[in-house]
Image 1: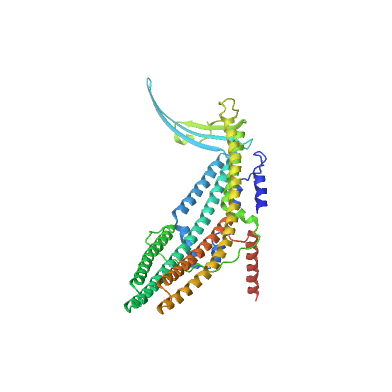
Image 2 (image 1 turned 30 degrees about the horizontal axis):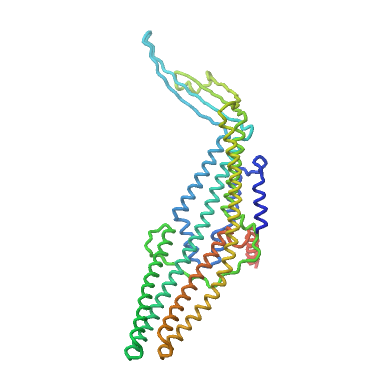
Length: 470
């Protein structure tokens, strides 16, 4: 991937403004076609988790989340602005109607005058300035569409991570309840030994301290669970009453990350596509600013008719019309146009650097997630073994203390170690699934390319037809 990133960075920083093969208004349509077939939210990493309740909740959030709906409305505004920019390429036509009543005192004459007029104007886009303006607006619209898809993918990942955070909170709360029960059982054993004179008051006080600390932890875990539920409700646009429940469990095993992931997977990332479209938009505006230094050609025409009676206005016997062509060349504006062109060129160069930085950050996110995935896989393995050993040690210690073979300190240490390792195991399992979600977010989807999706769909269609033939 490093070689690919270096090549991409070199390419994007060496392309001049004038020679850039910038896309036209068809960019948004092409994006829409690919967006509808990629299925970055439902058809991929989310479905691989095999958690229908989570998938349904993601759809609910996407339908009701205020931030996501705001981004969708901003995309709609960009679509209308694209139409505004495209209107400058077409002639403008306006109609006017006027009425006037006049009176002269000497001689005494009163008359009415009605007028109907039609005005037309059209700037001929000889140099392509208006076309560049339209293409810049089309790229802005494409940016808004990619931003919406990026928000959609990011929100789905955030919901999934919050869902697993709630599942961990529920399991941590259940573990805290079991710990209180275990410490209570130990306290009863120690109290029984104390009543029989087999242990002193220090053992009992230490057991009581452990039990009360476990009860305090249980209360804190309950508060964390409610907070996790309220977070899910806010994401779904609901009142945070902590009434929602996250179904399922954190998976013990995850599928292996395929070796040698193709670098083109990153091309699906909406933020990279949006950065590219921003680069295109600034390039178009640079072209537009440079072409504003050239002469502009326009045609204007008027047609009018005047009559004392309204019925005569629609007759074309006395219509007056004219057609005027003009050429306008900027001569002196205090350097405004030239400085504007230079500023846009500088912005284009700055945007290329931003695109390069976005690309580097994308590769870094993928590499970090891959490295963390390997580390967390090992942590889950070893923490699981440590937790199992600690739980067994706690059972042995409780039995040996009841028989007077060990002191209370050893018993309490074994209980705390068992609690800590079990809690740590729940944490690292949740961290691993969250990191896997971050990896999918960094790749812009699952581990398959667009060609893989198309091949899978074709195979499914062939299988379906074969079954139909049978």
